[in-house]
Amino acid sequence: MNTIVKTVKQHSYELEKETLKELLFIGNQFKNVKNYVYSRYSGINSIPLLSKPREIRDEWVKSSFANQWKLPARYWKLALSEAISNIKAEWSNIKRRIKEQCKANYNLAKIDKHYINYILKSNELYHRILTHEEYDIPSKFKDVDLNFKYLNNLIRRYTRKYKGKIPYSYKSTTFSVDIGLYSYRDDGINITCTKKGKRLPIKLTDSKKYDRTLIIKVVENRIEVHIPLNIRAKYHKDYENIIGIDKGYKYLFAVSSGKFYGENLNDYLGKETERLNEINGKRNRFYALYNRHLEQGNVKKANSILQNNLGRVKYDHNKLKHNETVKSYINHSLNKLIDKEKPKEIVMEHLDFVNWSGKYPESVKRKLSRWIKGYIRERLEYKCNYNNIKYTYINPAYTSKVCNKCSSFGIRKGDIFTCPKCGEIHADINASVNILDRKDDKEISLYTNYRIAKKILEGRAI
Image 1 (cartoon, helix red, strand yellow):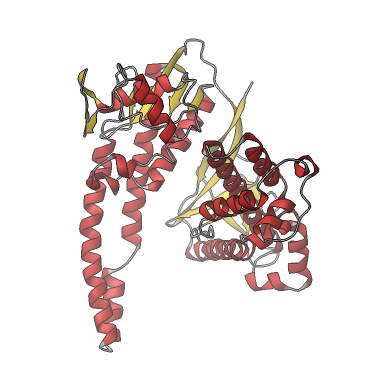
Image 2: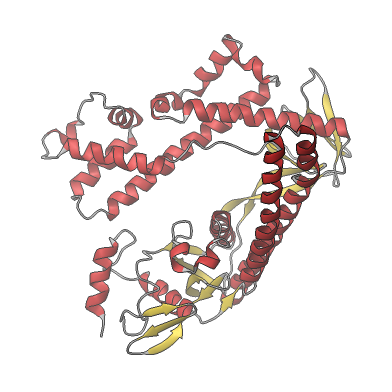
């Protein structure tokens, strides 16, 4: 039976000040190690080193470079390993997106795409091309008429496009511990600290014990212990429907069955947006006053404003509280969708890459933040895997701009899609039906260029 990873949590009681201070120091140094690795090894020139993390570790030990972190060796080695793994994952994601872009590039011949995919499979060849070094053309392409200069430049251009910024970590309250850095006791857990041979005793609210790498997260004056577990996926005999879903304007999803789920999501996001706009407006005025006092040399007044009016504790607490509320509502809505629709397959657009800002009014842009899109996709995929539901991504080109009945192009305005022939229909229901139909569309594949897709759709209009 299929298994998936589920993260369970353990919680501590309130921590003593010295214990909290020590955990925050470890978390901050753990973050600093990872950020150094990101800044030093995320670049193109470090690609060959990513397959040799042990050499990096041994060099740090030999030169005493690691002493600056003031952490037990197991901590910084674990941070190094995690950072290298994340960099590798980042490069894998870059290569995946290059392949997807090449599939959608109708100017490339099949042999051109084959060459690019071949290069991406070899880190050595990929590195040489990115750094403009000489390389031996693979034997299978030597007798083929290819424009190597153009294809290599295309690889470089796509890499620049998807490389992005260095993936720095900003979480100084989170760090990992492997089985050598902690031990359970009857009423809690002991975590290795920076003092040699000593561990911090922390009382937990439950007595369960685990034996794997854990994630320690400091939340205010407590900790959460995150434990990844392999669990069996569920199997539902009565899940027989194939549905299309579309991210709604005022709710989480519109479904091809004609139903909506997560109707209150827009309210949650809207209220928080208004609250933050008001609070940030006030904070900006205090920042201006703070800077003015500094310029005038009134350091005492400036520090008083910084301490009493620009603190982050309450601000971050309320923001975290809202985010957790939204996450809970999203999960509740997804559970309801799966329970009511009983799908064996869900067809959808790739939520991370759908341009919601172009789809919705300016007033909604701020609400549909990046973490919301990423979180919805992550949780939907997780729940599909957990319930043995297949999920299929389709080409999103014009799914919200054509009528699902006659294929005519129409006009979308808010919740309403107006077809010149069929009249008005709910815009998101119309899109969800189009998404479902796109699953079996043999002419418009996932990687069909949007210009070609438009021509095909125009030819289908009745």
